[in-house]
Length: 252
Image (cartoon, rainbow, N blue to C red):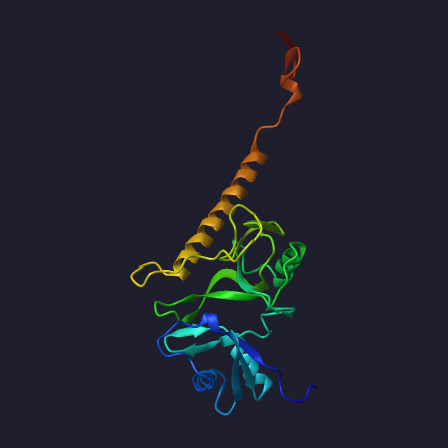
């Protein structure tokens, strides 16, 4: 049986809403204990763009990763692995990859095999996505999509990929629709304060478009397979009509 203090879990600073008053360590710890229970958090420390959260027990860590935490009016995800790779001059950027158009019955192992084939470097485990309410909080209802934090690919990933018999959609905000390399972090332009559509709604809209494209492609393939096949009986120099008592031969 494993002993000792559990390892840290992580919270991306950029996943928090940008308020006038920055989130401090005390607020992170209190928010974590709302999920994991009283006296379950030792400390929280911010280094660069990452909060490191140190739970007192493995059960507290497990609950944080599964349920996330609520800070202010938003619910944020807690990661079980450090989402950056320290290399040379600094950290390599990560992004959130969303996989859609797949049923909940499809196993994570099959999706992970597909991502491995695409040379994706994971920085977290694969998770199921939940719907959010109007205040940004997570609900218990599943969207049917999965997500995973990955190292930002040097070349844009395809918008669709085959998983088992399904055509999955792949989306992340830096994704180049033309399939070119990520020469620089592309992202979306910043939204003005009076912009009505939030970035999350824009991303959801893009994902839905890609999922419809997947369905359209699947229907196209099915229709292609349903096309009438060439029948040798009706080709060549003649047509033969056969009856139980006689045969009529007609030549064109």
